[in-house]
Amino acid sequence: MPRSEPIKAVRGMRDILPRERAIWRVAEKAAADVARSFGYAEIVTPVIEHAELIERVGEDTDAVAKELYRFDDRGGRHLALRPEATAGVVRAYFEGHLNQEPPPARLFLIGPMFRYNRPQKGRYRQFFQLDVEAIGSDSPALDAEVIEIAATWLHELGLRELRLELNTIGDSKCRPAYLELLRAYYRPLQDQLHGDCQRRLETNPLLLLDCKVPQCQPFKVDAPRITDHLCEECTVAWAAVRRLLDASGIEYRLDPYLVRGLDYYTRTVFEIYPANGEGAQDALGGGGRYDGLAEAEGWPPTPGVGFAGGLDRVTELVKAGGAEVIAAPAAEVVVLADAGLDVAAADVARICRTVRSVAVDYESKSLKAKMRSANKLGARWVLLLSAAEVERRVVQLKEMASGEQVEVGWADLPSHLA
Ligand code: AMP
Image (cartoon, rainbow, N blue to C red; front, side):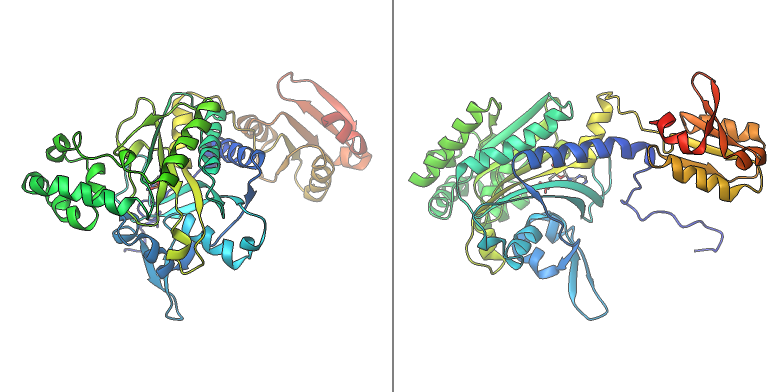
């Protein structure tokens, strides 16, 4: 790269500038408030994990097979940037001995995830998720609970036109026999399926239901449905989840083709879309039960259920909906002092900072230019300070909107600005 080229951001990584942060902060605060209101506590896990942790639990998924950021550190460890949060949260649950506390552990996390996919609108290589996990219990009430948290969060953000898709994929007891039925149904049709589906027919037939390729669509309608082949426990759990959602007034659509391709996923799966959106690219969030995940990581078998919502897409949708999130000015008060009065200006700022956000304009510009800048920044007040005023320990306090100006003693500033 020639020296004169400025260095730009990495492809697929983006900055969230202060004017956009306002909306992000609203979304994050709503997420934390809603999660806490359901008794979920915040957890932070590293963005770097052993590649094996991620690979073991997601080998067949795109997020791992094709999209994982893998690297070796200087110590020769094989590491990865996390593509999702659940694997790390479940690891932390055991390492942090949360499994010794009364179940379930109710946890939430907000943070960046990384996937090396093709960047486009709504799809980035670094993106942010709200992750909600209830670990240690197989109660279907928790499936409904995480769905309710997701729905409440989006509702709080003013996103009301949503579509919640719901399905169950059984468990290790009933799914194997169902998969055999599915294979038996598709085998005579194999030649008519597209390449990937032909291969998946034997290895992972559940994914045939999820296929979006047009030539595979006509066969889905007559395919056997897992909901007709659930074991007793899964039948009871499936009914309970729907009953609880009905009781909490959450609308959903049953989608027999909504599946997960990994063995450790069990029972409930769900996705949330904007009502008018269609592509998978629009999903605002999704989740489900993963009773086999802990074991897949090498820990004792432990059930869990969770939800991951995408903050990038959620904030974009909130913005597109015209939500009025007015960015607070970075500083409510700007101190404009004459040249050579930096120490006094900083002193005055410190006094005001007890009640307001304050910035000092240290630029060597004319007073008029400084006023213009303060106005542009949206300051509510400016404080004018000359040598004579420093001597008397007073300032001229000017309210920008009214233009009114009064002389105030330094000690009285907090009460004037409060
Ligand atoms: P997933 O873990 O794939 O179910 O993703 C959960 C949610 O995270 C999705 O519904 C999206 O809202 C969001 N998400 C996933 N991948 C990306 C990405 N590459 N860029 C932006 N948001 C994403």
